Amino acid sequence: MAAAAPSPQNQDPESSFARILRMLGKESPIIIVLGALAKAADIFNFIRKLSDVDLSVPYIRAGVVVIIVLIHAACGVVFYRQAVRKLHWRRPLIAGCIAIVLAGFLWRTIRLVNEHLPVPPPRPGIAEVERIWTQQLFDTQTDTGTSGGFGTVQTGHGVPDVWTSAQALNAILRGRYCSGRAAEIKKAFAYIDGQEMTSATGGSGWVTHPSYKWPRTEISAWIALAYLAGLRSGDIWDASEASRIRDRVIKLLTEIAGRQNSTTGGGWGPTTLMLPNSDRTYSTVLALWGLVEGRRTKPVADIVGTRFDGNIRNGIAALLRIPHDIGWVARLGSSETHRGLAAQGLYVLSLAADDPQLFKAIDLEDFKSLRQAFLAALVSTPEAYQTLERTSGDDQTLKLPDGSNIQEPFYATFFPFPWSLALLREQWLPHRQQTKASELASQLEQQVRTTEAIAYFRKVDTYELAENLIGLESGDEK
Image (cartoon, rainbow, N blue to C red; front, side, top):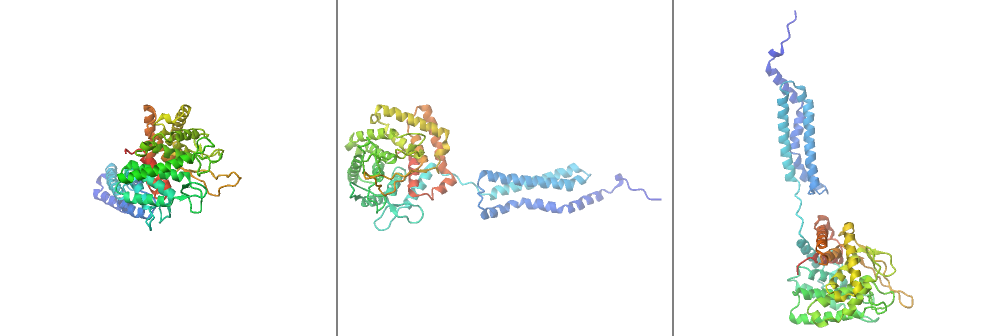
């Protein structure tokens, strides 16, 4: 007769416990995996060093944590299905213990993730960006022999250039970081003055290349603006030097005013030529800017008074006759428009609008309408005014009366960002609209604080860095 099987009630509890241990032993690989996960974050630093992925980006950090949570959850499910579910002895208790262990592993792993992943670097403030960019400009200044000009590129030792040097000086002198650097600034001005030439074709000034013979209006205007910015700063020249610089600026402004095209009624061209087809928008904007700033800057303003008011008034009228869309054309007859050129032109007109007497009555109303349209366009398409946007002006080659061309390049590049920012900071709107303009200006300036923008502006040409710094400095309290 066969012996009766032992009842469950009589079953030795130690045998059940032993079976549990044996089953856990079979599942030991899973337990090993769980233990390894607790240390998984230790390899994140190593991975980060081998990878180009920026693990400081917040959404990547969050993604890593989510992945760790999912791995733990998946291991918990597998362990439950393979081990706990097969046990009928105090299953809830065992499941609870497993959950506690997994939670402990998860807590430790997340802590390790946060310890090992890099902390996002703090974004620099606007003042710090200005300081960095100012130093980058000084770093391009050459110091070979008697030269103190600024190079055209930031990498290597670029050849000094007058146009670039004038723009760099404008950016430096309009900012808050020129104090204590008078010697370097004076050396740059000495370089510029040493490059002035008298042209056989008429007039004196500066050319864009030694082989060219036509002095450029834009260079003269940028140089006059740089001298005026230096006088306003009060940090560069002492009283005896300032009187000499004042006379130097007045001479420059007189020459610029003398280049105004009488055949077209008020525009300026890139050279001393005054032909029906020689006016260029960029030349007119810069010449007008120089004359307006001269009228506003002591001690130059004390001498010139209203001497150039007629030139300014006619120059404003010439700009407002240019066909306008969202952008402005670089020359009459062109169909290509430029937002950056429009923004710079409207900024200069806004400076002139501080004295409405400089406008003809109808021109003042036209200007206000254009400025309102610009703000509306900026609100509707802010992406068109980003820091990386730019357009190059179409061919501005001049034709001589005999039908031949001046064989010199007349191209220019226009940047919407700096001049849009400068224009938005001008106090020219009713309170409610000015609030909106200030909000837009804040949104624009935040672009330069990103890691991508900081890296980008380490590589751009010097003149692009200078123009963007001028726009950024437009909100500084001087």
